[in-house]
Each structure stands twice: as C-alpha cells, then as structure tokens.
Amino acid sequence: MKPPIFPAAVHAAGVPPRLKTTIYPEPFASRVAGREKSVLGDLFGLTNFGVNLTRLRPGAISALRHAHSKQDEFIYVLEGHPVLVTKAGEMKLEPGMCAGFRAGAGDAHHLVNRSKEDVLYLEVGDRTADDDVVYPDDDLRLTRGADGKRSCTRRTALHIESRDVSGEP
Amino acid sequence: MKPPIFPAAVHAAGVPPRLKTTIYPEPFASRVAGREKSVLGDLFGLTNFGVNLTRLRPGAISALRHAHSKQDEFIYVLEGHPVLVTKAGEMKLEPGMCAGFRAGAGDAHHLVNRSKEDVLYLEVGDRTADDDVVYPDDDLRLTRGADGKRSCTRRTALHIESRDVSGEP
Image (cartoon, rainbow over all chains, first blue to last red; front, top):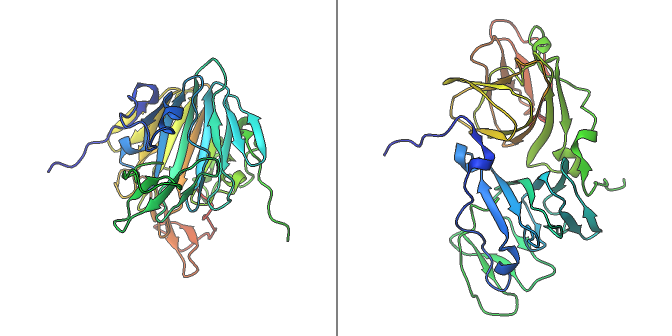
C-alpha cells in the first residue's frame, strides 16, 4: 500500500464539507441540519487533535449543549455573530473572538446562530482517550462500548443507535 | 487558594503578547525578534493543546525550521502572506490558507515573512509527552532532562542554556 500523500497547505474554504453531518439521532439531528464541517486537521494526517472549519446557516447550532470530561475544545470566529451559550448565560460573539472549553469543567456549551447571516468558525478539539460527553439540556448521552467506540443513546430509552464517533473533534 | 476564573470568550487581538518571546539562545533569538505570540488556549484553562495568535513583523520567522517527534501542529493564516518552508520547498500562503505538520513525519517546517506587511496566524499544537524537536538547518537541539523539562542546547557546544519550554505549543 502506498503511503498517504498530504498537501503542504490548502485554502480552507475550498475543502468540501464532510458527508457525515452528525452523530445525533432525530429529533436532535434536525437541529444541526444547517451545520457544515470541513475537516482540516485530518487532511494533513494530524491525529492528536482535530481542526474543522464549521459553517452555521441561520438557525443552526454548533452541537447540542454539551461538556467533555477529558477533551479540551477551542473556537475562533471568522465570520458572523454566533451566540455562545454556557451555564453563565449567553454572549454574542463576533469575528476575531475566541473561546475555550476546558475538559472536566462541567460547564456545557454550544453556539447558536440566531442571525440572518452565516457564521463561520474554526473549532479545535483533542482526542484524549476515555472522554465522556454529557448533554444537560437534552435526552441524550454518549456511552462507550467494550470496543472503545462511542455510541449515541437516549437517556430514557433503550439503545437506539450506535455510531463510531472517534473522528469527532 | 481561590480557583482560577476563566473568561467566557475574548477578542483575540486584545490579548497582550507574552513577555517571554523565545526559548532560543543567540544568535537564533534575533531571528524571531519580530514575532509576537498572544496565548489564547491557556486563557481558558486548556491544557491538552495550546493555541496562540502569532504576529510576524516583516523579516521575522515563526521558528527555526523544526520537526516534532510526537506533537502535531496546525496553522491558519488570518492576515498577510507568509512563506511556508518545508523539505519540499517553498509555498507562499495567503489569508484563509492552513497547513498541518504531523508528528514524526520528519519534515521540518517554518514560516518566513518576506513581505512588507505583518503576518497574523493562529497556531495550534498539542502537548503530548516525550516530544523531541530537531532543527535540521541550525546548530541547535532540544534535550530533555531527568526532571522532564526540555532544554535548548547547541549541537556543537556544551550545554549553554536550560529553560522550561513545556508551555510551548
């Protein structure tokens, strides 16, 4: 097998969004329907962390409000005015603003695009093993199987879906 | 001791550059004299990876050309036109372009600002332990002491300098 060939550099806006748009089952999947992620870090063979260029159409959210146990996250706004929602409340962001969400803080977050313009931002997340994700506002959780793969489940129902989300930043 | 308080979000351009500008001894330090790093990830208590907003004045370089053994790196150009130098040669970048440098690839890289305008970019690097850095073009290396701290040394001289560079992204 030939070794993979990686580019030296790319125009981020020219990288097509990935086809797999979400790991959520319905009705949660519809809430991120206007979200497009172009995977940048993996393009260069990076494995320790992921970097995406993410676009939120008007009305879309970045994710269900969530908190990671072991993985840090960071976002940098390139275009538009997303609203950052955390336990402390809401904060309207603008281009050039950034935010970080440290592992284990227990403060769930997400971005909401309530404007009429697209929001474009960079997101970074590491891939520390044994990370758990909680969603305080929604009937959803991630669980880990014996194979190490994470699965989306409902809190109030039997296991409904199992997807490998190890590529998620 | 009171727990640290982290901001929800900040304007990246409003974060003052760090005072410690380089880990290099002379004559290498002068080559990055026009480089300013504003530390963003640490502001939010992130520990798994670092994110900096880095400015290169005309003539400055991002670092000596170097390669990491275990840590990935990623850059995204916000302003200006740096030249990316790798083993493959040179490539002029522009705003909206990004590049990744995977751990262990053995291909050293750096950015050079040969323009008359500032270059501004985001840089991300994880903090995987036991990372080594090599500088193929320069008489320099990083070594690790028994205390786990990395030190800058010359290849051709006795140990000249010892600095904790664990905060480097």
